[in-house]
Image (cartoon, rainbow, N blue to C red; front, top):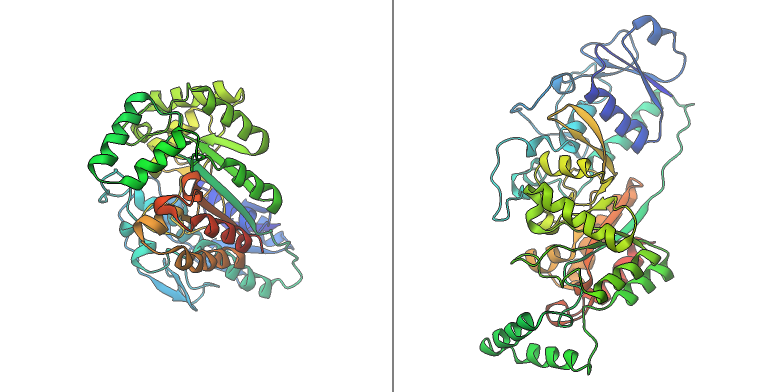
Length: 434
């Protein structure tokens, strides 16, 4: 156990020290504001305050963890050896910046509470972030800092043994469209035929006709393939099901259809299933509740995990809504436009609500990449994507983190714009499980 002396124990101090030391480095931690208690402790310890007590392991504290609310902070990026960092400390500090304040700033998503420009879907943009603008979006710097801190700390306390955590991989699959052509309403089917004819998309007309006449299998119906990969490679797989009503942005088949209900029931038997709240749930708590209850009615079990459709969420409102509905895990933390680490970490963390200054029970699982980011935003080929995936996986593996990927069942179809992506998924799983 590490004993931390600080002049004031705040919720922010408890939260980030436990995340860095306990959840990331697996080191128990306790706190004290009493100098005599700290001095009497014979084991490893550190001081987190304005000035050192004597010659102990000391980190000069920034004011951030002792404040409340959100302020417009001045941030100057420097380097800790080759790693970007900020909130510089003086020469007496054991490391050149306040690792705990900087980590809190990134993990709490402090910058998303500040005024910022949103994209057309009302989302915080990667280009507004500190990580993007300082070229560390694709590095889990909070985890990198933690392990560099541990190295420095062990030089001071060489006999202190620490057990490293293990790297893990989680494959997540969003089901936005269960089927490409089947089980749509008559109006939707006729409308799609007419649209394809008018735009001379004759190949799409042929595919739709072949599937509806049972000449071909629906290309998006590849759940057996995904489950076989899960079974053969022994990977943790989570499906997020969209069960909302039809809108411009929510185009799945009706959750009332028996074929869809049976599919969800099958998935529950072989993998984990979560809710994929529809586009407009970001600002509609009643709609979110309705969809959660709808999925629970199909699975006959509580829904405890979620990922927002289009990755649309506002902090802290969307997460507060999820907490009110007893959602325990959220997998929305990532960008649509860029791969990388939105919260600068590859370690699941509990959401800290800056409105109420508390650690909440909602655990956030940040993902590193999404298929549509690679194909639609970055417009790179499956072969090029594999290189980016390998780089991100190596970053996570280097800090024994959790590598989370986001694919859709449709991207594994090898259909139309997704040609070659099924093979990419197979290759990615091989890389991720090495």
